[in-house]
Image (tube, rainbow, N blue to C red):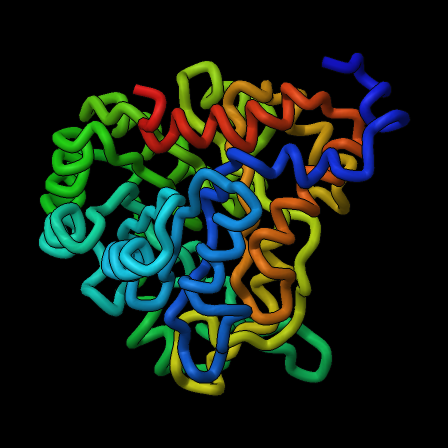
Amino acid sequence: MAPVGETRLHRSYDLPDELLVGTIDTHIHGGPWLTSCPGRMDPIQIASRARDAGMAGVVFYDHTLGNSCGTAWLTGRVVPDIAIHGGIILTTVQGGMNPRAVKTALYYGAGAKFIHFGAHCTYHMASREGALVDGEPVPFKDLYPRFAEEELSRAIRIPLTDPIPRELEEILVLAADHPDVYVNTGHVSPDEVMRLADLAERFGIRRLEVAHPARALLTMEQQKNLAARGVFLEGACSDWMFHRGLPRSNYYAEPEYADEIAGIANAPRFAGVVPWARQLREIGLQSIVLGTDYGIRSAPAPVEGMRLLISTLLDLEFTVDEIALMTKRNPARLLGLDE
């Protein structure tokens, strides 16, 4: 293994492609998508290109309907020789904190590999999405009384005190009873992240991952605390390379709910890749799982996102072994593939 600095100065033209072999992208939005917000490519195209590049696995998200287990199963039938995983993202589309949806996902299609506490329909996220009005960001909850009444009122929240709702308890028990499944915090607030870490310990959940938008809002002290407790912390290309401010129908079919501001107001506070990478080192690379969060139409293909990620880390003088840790070994540990 080349010393720090040596890889950047003397690496071969082909090194990023070589390091791409065996990686696992644990965060791909593979679709299907809302017709108002089409994706970059379909799941079969994503998986085929990843396999052809030598990647070991992909993990599909569906943050609209929530369940990507069927997509993973169908894609796996068409694209052999690569591990394809799905899971369940709790969404208000399927009733929010819904134990029946979780139980079904565990046995549906390829079977859920993760349980995720919501993306665009968490209270934390939904309360921050909105539009620019005369150049000023205004949340949907203030623009549209109907949004506050119909959407924000049923958004997913993690209670910060006991007792916890029966539905949440049932979901945590299901997660604990399926040790091959990991829990992802979703796009929740910092306080909710810390609460979920405490609940995961209480219920005996073996693997917890902090979603990258949530991690970005945590203090360094909180992140180090979580790492010391064995929690995985996610990093993604979209932390520092994302088209912010574009109106997107990420979750809602109504055109007026195309978000323009959450990507800015709730953006990771990294101000570029250099402080982002510095923070990974400070947390401790043994706790970091890297993925792309790609699949959106305005981003590169996910496989190109992984290549970009690897090339950037090389430029920042991460060693070959450190890159393998965050893109191969840690993702395998998160998915329980090393057992």
